Length: 108
Length: 114
Image 1 (cartoon, each protein chain N blue to C red):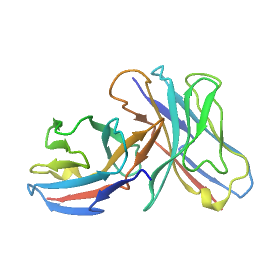
Image 2: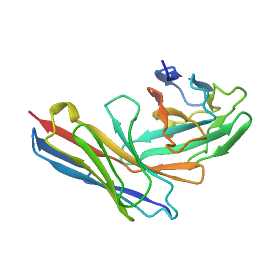
Image 3: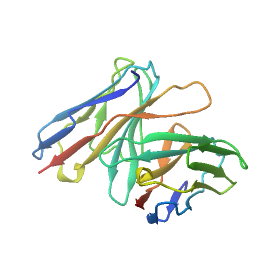
Image 4: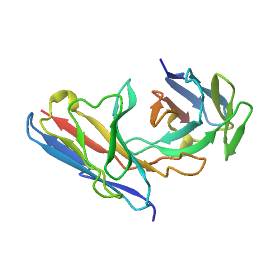
């Protein structure tokens, strides 16, 4: 069964303390892996799409990487405004499967 | 401004009272989808539509109906809501062409069924 798993469920970081979030998947024939940011009470906001192992994408303090089995979202020197839930998703056929997300809190 | 809109944003209703949540997008997207989001379960796809008059079930379609009579609109219908349909609902759209498959999400509808 196709599956998307994210870890950790929650992460608390001091401002400036870099870390990584993990998204592992068991989808066969990957047609892209997507990262979203979701603020409380709002819809997910698109961050990155990765298509092949070895690919990397960057945006401000965020960098997403992809291997054949998992993706990492690296957060470098985070700021309090980076606090949010980060979701990953993969398409299978015409459907999308989301992980349950990592709730990130950055403490000033 | 490119956007997906949903109405209402908040809804409290009683068991069995039919309701409709509207979704509209102004990006001329072919693909539209409904999700529900529950704590610990994440976002789960309810129904999706590849184009006008083409709809298909997602992972959790029981108790829901959809229709796609116009490209821009994709309403979600709960014929007889039950308390287990209390959830946060999101509509999303994307183009079917291109490489990104990027989905644009609406602001969400928080539904409470008592």
